[in-house]
Image (cartoon, rainbow, N blue to C red; front, side, top):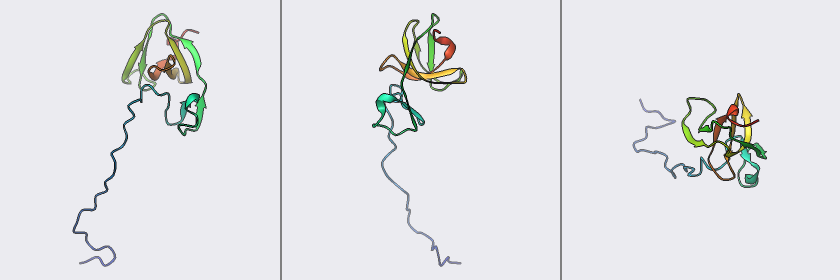
Length: 114
């Protein structure tokens, strides 16, 4: 039986277009879906912008992770005494940037000096 409303297509009509952009700065730009460093205001659209709260990494150092959990991928390590600019904190984890232009990721809040 032939469909009179949607006749059978004999050719492929696959959608094509540009490949999705890969953000090569994903781990060095303090931008995520809901929040960005205030320096990106006017450059990226997110619901909130944050002024960084400067902290210092504690004596044990810290592992910077891709998500706020212990089994998340490791992005890098932070040495004791290193600057960490905290932009958000929730559930015992902080999201921010190593210094002014270093790696961006999550670390346990306990890794920061009070």
